[in-house]
Amino acid sequence: MNLKIISFFFFLFFLSLPAYPYTHSTSLIKWQEYSDQAFLTAKKENKPVFMLITAIWCHWCNVYEEKSLEDKDAAEYINQNYIPIFVDYDKRKDISRQYPASGLPITIILSPAGERLITAPGYIPKERLLENLKKTARSLGDRETEKRGDGETERRRDGETKKRGNGETEKRSIEKVTHLSSKELKKITSGFKEIVLSSYDKTYGGFGSSQKIPYADVLESLLYLYEEEKDKKWLDMVTNSLDHMAGLRQKGDDKRPEPEYLIDLYKNRDRKDWVDKVIELQKKYKLSGLYDRIDGGFFRYSAERDWARPHFEKLLSDNADIIRLYLHAYRISKNEKYKKIAEDSLNYALTTFYNEQDGRFYNSQRSDIVYYYLSEKDRKAVGSPDVDRAAFAVSQSKMIITLLHAADTPPLIPPLLRGDTRGLKDIALSCLRFIYKNMVTENGVLSYYDPAKKEKGLTGQLEDNLWAILAFKEAYLHTKNKGYLDTAETLAQFVVINLYDKKQGGFYEWRIGEAKGQGSGVKGQGLGEKAYLLNGLAAYTMLELYKLTNKEEYLKTAKETIGAFLPDKNKPSSPYFQRSAGYLIKGLSK
Image 1 (cartoon, rainbow, N blue to C red):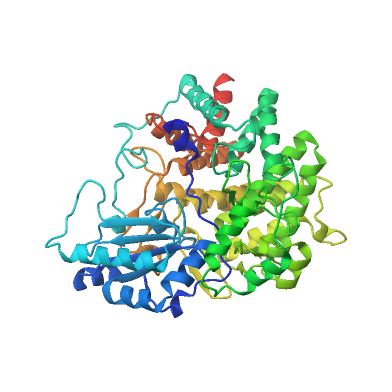
Image 2: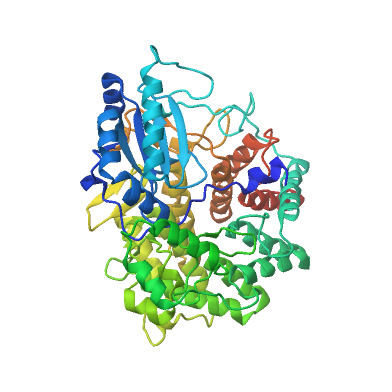
């Protein structure tokens, strides 16, 4: 697989999942929030920064925190020799995006001046952690002055970092591209097809030859291609992938250890060899597919090419995308298995994530590796993993869109709703009302909101606003209530005014700062980067609004966004750039 293909399917997916949340406010480590003050303290005291990026749903984050960071010796050493900074991956996406790595948790060591020295993804055993921390501290102690502006990093915490050679933040052209030829647009669509065909796994479906990630948006684009071109190869690629993803084509039953062994491992997490036993469990007994055939719903990704050894976190966002994909495949193929999987997974989402009282959805279910090896009977005996009860704009918006699509797929009725007066459309619209009432602000939509903790944060994030726009747009299509379209346009105006680059074209991914009401934001952080995949989604969103309103400003913004990335030869087309280009090609041919 060449670099062009790898760049397309590179995904910041994260190592498995947790059983318990990490309450950093009661930790042995004296964590500080990511802020100017924390970095000023590091500089004043001449101490390096120990930064942890972790997610509440991540299993190995939990193991790292429990087995390494909460060890008395490790905590004391960090407190005495470092300035510890805690970052919640989900709640501070603006920060997480500045420090990419190949998995969670992410340990980052920065110099007192803010220069990034070490980035280490994954679980680090206590002994190795302490050894490396001491080496780093000694090394920094020998320095007389801090190097600055080394061409690699330029004070990433200031939000002024310019990545070199990756096509994300470099200036792409001197003048903004305002005209797109049919030839240029066809290069985008043909480039997308080329990459998909080159990276497709004919044996097991999906893309690539190692770990398997669903890439639901890519597979759904293939369904659209099949509907447009009637070329059966696109449909065959999707059905092969969906069958393997759900474990329908794998031969033989999944082997599991004796229940007594699993129950013992589940209950005795404090044993010294627990981590080794869990790793051994996953190596010896390989479960197949991402689909949870007992509880329903989908896990995040699989560690092997044949979709074996799934990593067991369940995120609302992923489930919304995958359920919508199976619904689309069912409407085309009439395969009853796809319908059943969609129904059961919707039932899982409604029973696990939906809060009927608030009219909203929770965000994620933590993993417990041992739990998912238990039989249905034994799972009921121990109880399911905890759920993160915060509401996130992206995941809720995606589920709203999926529910509205499901409402148009009769006779799709999840078991939970049989005999109930509620409908899928009603649930979707109740969630949309929750977002409008609690999460739409004058600075765009909030990234997250937790009513129970009375905690909310982050406005001005491109991804959050784009998905909220698409959710309100979808509600308008299903109800013809113009109020939904008006809200979509209001959010679109915020995005264009605050995040669009009027000189070069394209959208920045975030704008935060104290002036925007970010209680824990870094003062004066300003604009983020122009993320390639998010700009594809932005172009698509602008075109969706243009279709409904016929307002030229949306069409112009979409074209300029596509044009801003045309000179970037190292980036293949995203599925949303592909859909956008396909739409424009049709328009040019009329």
